[in-house]
Length: 532
Image (tube, rainbow, N blue to C red):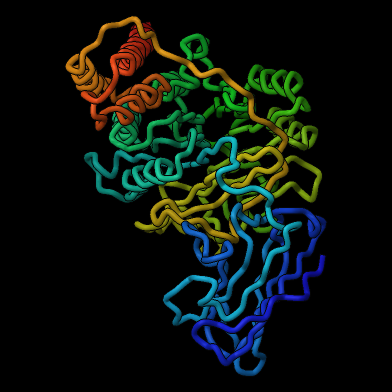
């Protein structure tokens, strides 16, 4: 599709100057709604301009500029190219070009406007998303930051984790998935302390929905104690928060998104700290993955695989020709070759990985290997994105740079929006669209019991009790039962209890009582497991 006819307009700051935006969509998806791949050309007087996604009135909130363009006096035009599978966001109907000195981001402030045709617009509004989640990786809570040794690594990991959770709360994400390395595990004797910090930050945050962690290589950093560290991961992550799953003593698990039935398969590294040196996946784990795929693939639901380590020379996460990162899992190992085969045989699944930390700007974020494999997304890092200096990874972490994805799942499209969680903004050039296939399942509303005679004082006392319970059990904040009770507390803590009807008070009291009972139950079960 060649959109050569851009709309010509006069800008709010330069009313006497005529400028033009041309957007030519290219690639195999040029005719598909929501696919941004293409070349934007701005023809304008010499100067500095910024391009933005916009609705009919102003630039979209929560987004960085698409690009900064310098128009030279000799050529009087500049271009920007959107890459493969980049996304036109929900709510975007226009691209606007704004002069560099302009303080406003309204359409009327633009020097040129391009109207996106209805056929090319995503076709969904943000509110149409059936569910949303954040995809994070490599959080790296690090004892060197607060322990007995000086801070040399991941010095901002705690504040970055808090900011990531604040972003998830702001975006009202239905859940979080992580691609591993929640902790750094620099010293095995401090591993439990790092998990406690991870949980404390989660417990203190405003985020109240589930979180599902993946076991990365740092969770099992000490090779002589792999089984002990795997047990620590199982207990501290809570896996899918079902005691039956936890009791199986396997660090991998799956869960079902309740609104759609979409399947999330959460794999785990099982052998040791150096993925390049070990055959990381047991045959049992690979059999389990393939069984799940055979049972669920092609049945009208999205399937996601969450796994930590990228594959050497394959998929997203690093440069194919001159790899900067040497810690990838080796495709020559039996299980990785089998995993690679899964990615190529089941082309409609989505694989999410992490491990290399490489910043979104390096453009190793999405690939489907030219259609020969599934959709593969690589996370950057919450703890600290890395760059490349003189051909090697540069671990010079920045206080205000922490990156992850905000994911919107629509019936026919999935949008992975790359964001800097510190500034709570999305990068337009690092946001990707994937074809989806799901629909909402209608569910009956659940009601609490209404046969209880509950006073306003009873309810206030119960809410205070919730606060105490959350403080006592903060180390279980990864568990759904904890997050559910926290959600109840946030919902009712500022309510005017005296204005509630007797029926409303009874329902609230019942929800609180059930929430505390469920949390007590999982805590008691885990205490027994620790004794074992």
